[in-house]
Length: 233
Image (cartoon, helix red, strand yellow):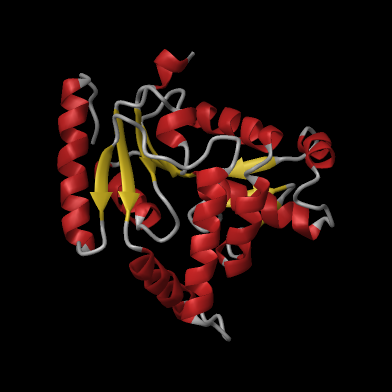
């Protein structure tokens, strides 16, 4: 099965490193599917929190998973739905990041979403971004990239992003502490921890402009596609 999943650009990295915006821009430039796996974990975290579940209740959540409807890429305005509810806006709230980090520790949740993510790439070349894409979800991806940036830069980016969306009562030190806490949980979790794949190319975006990152990404992906004899864009 894994051999058929090589038509993937796998982008991993911690929160605030720029992987989401760059993965989205790259997919648009190459005219291929963009898959935001973090949005999927956020959606399930938000959904189960609102349903009154403890996000550590693996057995209860696993039982419910078999009965929910999960949709991704529904339309230009709707990224993700759970049981028919559009959660596109709610998953971008600051608390959704914590929900995602907590629920992503659950093995049954990861199994559910990994299976879903793999179906998206069965017949299409995709840019897939998350935290374990190149190590677990698509270990045979033809191109693997790992984004990073200093925690100070990532906190400032996240703070600005939230401020631009109108969230009030924000504190840059709290945002930084939340990022450091999530890094620790993601890197130390038992199931699919965040780490750079041995064959992934490292992109430190701390001092890079978005245009420079995108140009370098496109060049790398096209080179890798040529080597893998894949046609993209």
